[in-house]
Length: 286
Figure 1 (cartoon, rainbow, N blue to C red):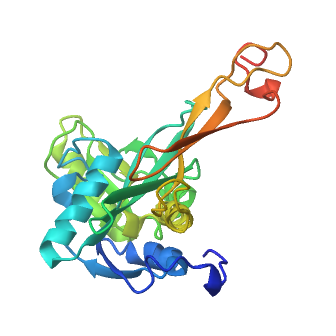
Figure 2: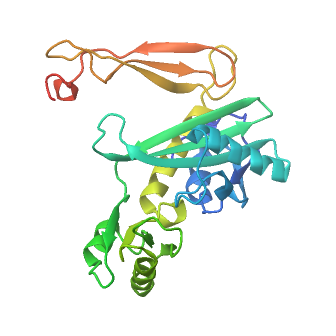
Figure 3: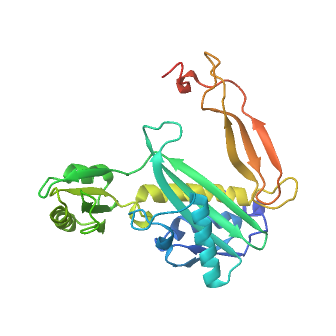
């Protein structure tokens, strides 16, 4: 949690209520992180799965920020509140090191009273995301130990992609063994695929990243725009191309950071001083 003295809290959100759209207990990460802002988090358990699921039954359409905003607005519509919160996560190649799998978590506040949508994010390579094809009766102890089972739940599905025989939220070995047999029986090749269940309430590593994103959102909600004074001023993007300290060629490192207001068009560009580490240069360190 952020260590912010009470006197530093911006009064804009003190005592206001934002409704959080979740069915997976994300209030445990988001509410404490936002406490320094004075914002009160109220949970509404709407069906967020209709906006997309990690297990793939419902595809997600739009960017993570767009999906999180839809969730928040659905919660606002259901409760009549003028502020809403939601989060959205996705797994994929790390933007700087594509061989690594990264977890990107977005937390969004929609504030119709101020007319702003404020989003923050956190990125981590500390993920439990994994998948393995197995046969019935195969020893799964190594896989379970590697992902942190049973704190990290598992999913089992037919290896051939059949929609039948899918089991989610597995946290007991007898249930996992039975799910492998059922999935293999439903698969044309007689095999099952075991993978981590990445829903937040069943994935400890995701919960930590969600909390980090929410803490960054709290900082942003306590930062006012220097032009219009509306809270939500913060980093929105970086400009790549920082020159390598050895060869001088552009790298993926940031040459400048851009901060933007959530409501007006005010932006500030802050150059990043000094050269990039040659270790990050694709020419010096391919």
